[in-house]
Image (cartoon, rainbow, N blue to C red):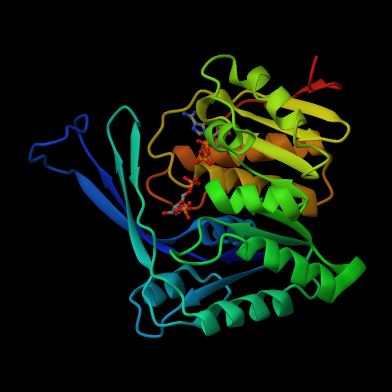
Length: 318
Ligand SMILES: Nc1ncnc2c1ncn2[C@@H]1O[C@H](COP(=O)(O)OP(=O)(O)O)[C@@H](O)[C@H]1O
Ligand SMILES: O=P(O)(O)OC[C@H]1O[C@](O)(COP(=O)(O)O)[C@@H](O)[C@@H]1O
């Protein structure tokens, strides 16, 4: 079972333009769709669509319109009652697939609500193979929240604790890497560079991220799945690195592509696949998500045609 946590859910509105986005003018939009989103929810929807067991944990006010949208997905979830409503994030995609994301900070949680969220997450981890801590934290929440979760889950479940994947950015990611030792992180090249305090690479991304990842794996994190948009993805663990370019696709919207990559990786892992097949699955799911509008979860029927070629590098630094 894969438990996902979305501390900062978002009602995702995706708008499609039939001309490139221009700032400072009035522009007609061609279409729009709404999804119950946020990184953990997106991961969970892909896992559920693939037929594997999953549970989403999130803070949610009873009278929040987000609840109806989430209910329509059929995703099993455990909502921790809170006062604030889910934020609304906006994604704008132009005909070339260029995606602009406008993300709000999200309503603050009260201190009792944060404690309740942590307790529910720990309880939900009984029999879980993976715990996925995904997305930003609501404004005002302690940046160590994910560290607190990791410590509490491992203290409660010991050897039976799930492996823990973290997909976040900025201060919460720095905190987790400083003192949480997660089993897996899933940054993109910008988040990875920010974490390591270096400039993000702009060329030959598959190779350029390897030394940055090697500075973190395995001392600070067990493994890293680094997604690189149209350039593909890299997986680094204590035994070396795996590199896979992305297939050429027609991009509809890249929102949710990173979440689908992580879901694809975990799906293959819980089905017993080797890391190279987990990486290929991450690429297939990420690329499939990018061909779909909004945060629609991809299934295997959306996979782009062709083989995913995975190369191994035993020493990421050479
Ligand atoms: N333009 C694209 N062409 C092909 N695949 C893509 C494209 N954009 C994203 N993907 C797929 O989705 C994955 C995740 O995308 P990425 O943009 O790195 O995630 P994030 O949203 O976390 O930044 C990539 O590793 C790739 O497999
Ligand atoms: O929690 P954050 O980092 O603000 O991101 C939330 C947004 O990211 C998404 O989960 C999409 O993420 P990706 O495009 O990185 O896969 C949206 O559903 C949501 O609006």
